[in-house]
Image (cartoon, rainbow, N blue to C red; front, side, top):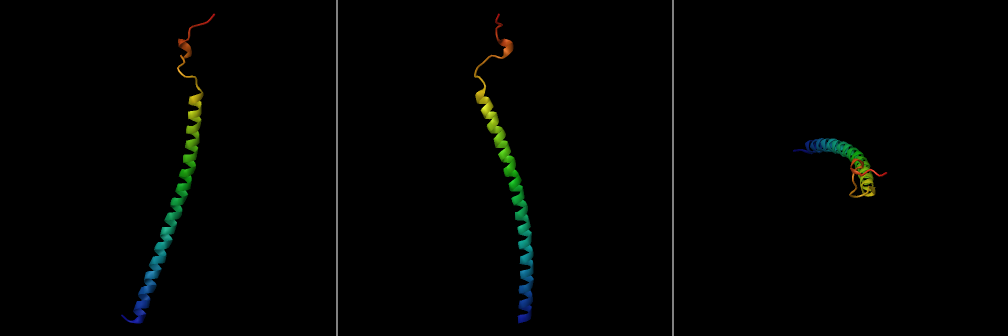
Length: 73
């Protein structure tokens, strides 16, 4: 293999490596966008769960529903 063939081969390899790096960068950027959306949704879900837990602890424990309460006159 002469010098020109080696140089051509290296340029070819470099071209395909740059192309692959660009593809990987695009994939990584897309994944990061998905992660950002999922983190936002997870924070919202955690906030809702926190509110539900707070409301559950504020309710009186072991109370009868109103239709089982004796009437008071």
